Length: 305
Figure 1 (cartoon, rainbow, N blue to C red):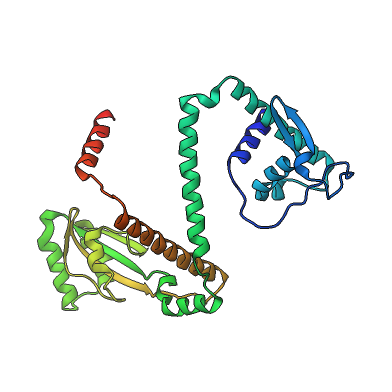
Figure 2: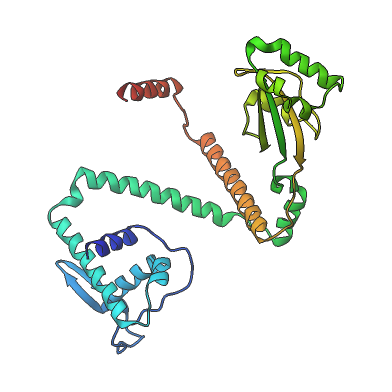
């Protein structure tokens, strides 16, 4: 029962309504006429609080999405259980009020923070409602103009020769043999003489962001069968060879990409509208960020931690 109450507290406090479908809830005995004002029909009295049919219906509608997923409106026992939980919630609320918990600093502070959060969510919702929803043709047009965004990344398969810092002369010799075609790369890395002198490894297929940034600057310009100049990193001297390339692949326009584009367009429009709203606010109101004080705050928090 404790878990049930905690869950019910959460669904009461959080406004989950996201659809516009009406919930028609009639009294359990179905004997109440539709022309009677539901505000005049009491379901319960808890202390000074009176709970009418309209109150319970408002609660159902406020948490419409949750109840549609978890409540069978044709099941009398389920409805009765939900109503009893609602009564229990209101009873405990009255007990808290009787103990003046609604006047404590903790309660008032949290209410103010919740109100701010609710206002932000309502503002977000209003911004989204004002955005013109893109049509299917606009989504497809975006795809055609931005195909590269949906392509799989270019992948290259690499082999690496690594020499110690005191072994530059030997790796330079290898580079000259490659440059003059005196030896092939695979012949060199399979030669036991060079295997003893260098650390040779097959890095397999990689994509951007995987290898050392000092190497990445050079390796992604390689074509299949090419190798780099000698590259110095914190590990030593490298020659990197590309033995296979998989070029970017662009998938066909499908529902997944369509949804991704829709969200992208809506998100970009939302950010643009919010930035414009903030800019208008700054023009007509005092808006000043005190950077020096912010630095002091950061230093103060770092000292505490």
